Image (cartoon, rainbow, N blue to C red; front, side):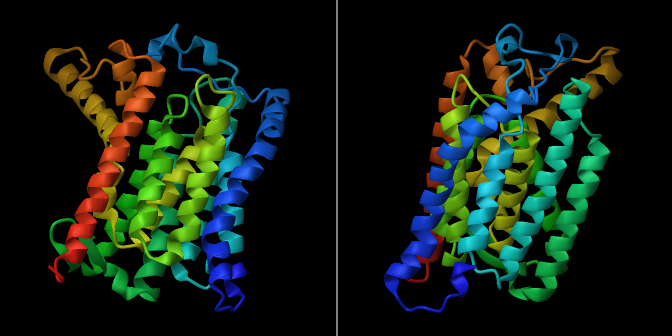
Length: 345
């Protein structure tokens, strides 16, 4: 909205693109956070923990029972507010980011609400989740394909840009849906998903053109504000309301910036979390069919729980995964920078 104000002032540009997106979400988080936690506690919006039969990490996570969830309402609300205030609302890419963020946040809210009312870790059905994500991603993909045809030129690390034509549509679906669910799977420990999102958002801030700056700064600042209350021991969880929406937003940014392949590197922790679940499910079904009983490839999936089972504390897992995300972000940025400098060198 503020972008619509025509000005050549460097101060105004810095204010809109940098200062407000950094300060507004974080400061408002400090004000809203305690009040939101109190409201969620009064509503008894506690986080259900998986039952022992489903692989619960008891007694490690038993103390988490009753911790308020749906804190993602604050994260996504502040991100959307900042985008509406500071981003270029005439840009088709911003339209898609807003669309996917709103749809996946709504989906996450339905899932969290179902878990709370059922007092179970089972929310809405997986088929319903995928269907709604598919609709949002498909609408976004077609809108981008016909309004910004140049987005079919995707950046491929170590190679450069390649036009994939209509394959952009299925790739966009895969990236947006995959990223949404990958971040959702990563959100299993205090501060893990929010910490990783801060690092990935800042890495993308260095890579992407200015139109994305308010978005990436808003994501980083809102997640930092949430991490203030979500760090171990967490006072609130983001829930699917936050994790599905953050992942959907991240996937959409990657699609809108021609960098879905770079996201695989920078967001490597998210990819590993999703792959660990797929490997676990595949291996269990395969061994059950071959040996008559299902066997697990990991001690527990997603992979952050595997390392907890191996004796790492929750804080150790989070900090080490943050460090890995930082290194992967530096690697991704280095690859992108080297490719960009090839014509000069």
